[in-house]
Length: 237
Image 1 (cartoon, rainbow, N blue to C red):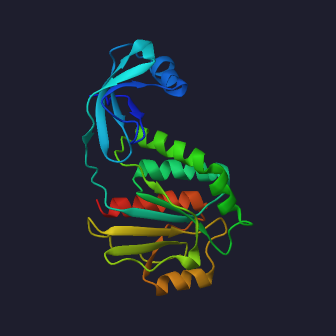
Image 2 (cartoon, rainbow, N blue to C red):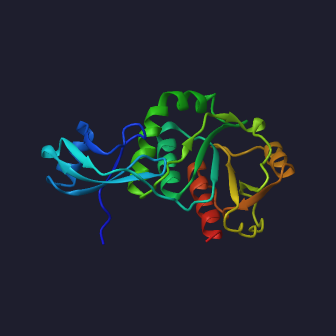
């Protein structure tokens, strides 16, 4: 059975009754999906509520049923990454949302480029929010991940109790860790373009992070983040 088209409505907008659509939503429904009045839809607020709806008013509105809570069975996964260029960061945010990250944390590391991550986060915060909504809609997610304020790697707090920490590692021959059991919270650290320094790697290992070997090839930071996320999620089943 084909999944219903989905629309994101912020928690303060999602309610029972008629809801107006903006121009971008109308274009997608009418021009891209070619829906007509009466077409069934699913609305979601990114915070765990969904509502059945139907297109009305010639595509200018939807008629929504009462929202209901819907559980998303995802154990917490924080991906902390030294962001690449803005365009590559856009791709990275989109893919982490699709894969199932629950929090995305931009990092400033020793080899981050000229303070760029902080500036990019400020400039692109709105764009990343929109990408998160679109990727969550595409991936049928019920709860959207949190985009956290950027932070310095050396200021990361200690791993909370019940959380396993991993750091992407390019060291050849490093053994793969045992997969974490289901339900355990995960925190993944991935360095920026240029990688983490030996000091940064040593500090993370000393604080309980396990090296996660990603293979013999040198990966871009965004590729490494996606690859490591897939390995951790696959390992937990």
